[in-house]
Length: 115
Image (cartoon, rainbow, N blue to C red; front, side):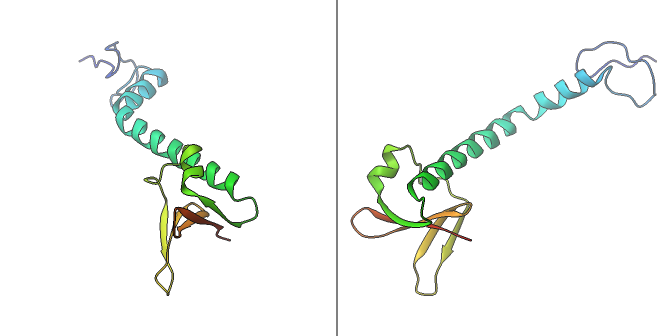
């Protein structure tokens, strides 16, 4: 009984439990299988990376303030964060890795860096 490659359909030569004719076909098969999930992860990571760069650029001294408008102008997306920290007094900091922000009054944000 001849087995066919799961990716290209070519005849497989070798071990009885072999599923692919080559490493190329094996990689192509699994890349196609996971394509949708990889795109989602790639897009989210790109968005987080962009948010991180914006916070890092706006906060060179590890603690400063800025406006919401300045963040939005640079392309910051408030929907993408990696963690939330709530202080004992109830203040909520939003973090993108180690760069964070705290919403204050009148569209002002305190930017911090966690060590």
